[in-house]
Length: 363
Image (cartoon, rainbow, N blue to C red; front, side, top):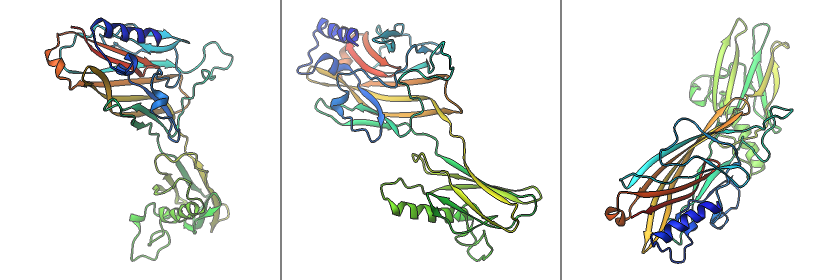
């Protein structure tokens, strides 16, 4: 990071660009963090520091790297840093994408599934935060959540013969009313004029499980709301006519206790089970940054207008973690209309993510 700071400083001095009270590194860099949503990190915590991200090392480009950029460099303890220069674009904006492949495991270890020290790839309830800097004194943050797939639990009935009767579900000791062995999945499937068990008003698995989840929330308002839920029913299966229900909990609610079951079927050999569907793990993300060059007098800086991130999830822990970064860069500075054809863009990505961005006139 020291070498890149010198590059920014040297270019600005060479071309007589003044930053007033703003240091060169603060004038041209993009600063950000990956943190838990309840983390108290602020603008001050990220300014003047390299964007450390998740700590991957030995990242490599997938496919062609942007023509403007030098070979990726290893800095400090070997963490990836992207450097660039010699951008010959003639327009006031551009879009570039970096595709990186980062090893998530140690090499030559006795245990092949040992992760790199300090690396936690399967992040939940985390977000990207960037210093927004719409104006020089702006200390607000641009935030974008790393959204993960919601948790799913599956309730299944098994029976050697024809099935009948009811069962109940329990979550953290809160019980549902009796649920019919053939209950429809969602409340919208209930028939208002029917008194058939499993079909009439309030008879769906969604309705009855929601009652228990609401009671659970009443015990502690600080707990996340595990509703509204979505339920899908499969069946009837085979001669016994059994069913399976898949229950999807709300997005961004994780580590939900596995439900317990209580059977009350007509055949004592009929069983009901509840299990967590295998959760997929985080294998990568695609970060999209919308950045604008701003100016005030002779001060120039980068304004992070917005960020979005999409997660890539797969079964099992990753052998490689994939990071894709797209930067959409624009400028509203009138000076650029009179500038020469060449510009220099200085980008430092720590772990394949932006830590410093300079957009300077090379007149």
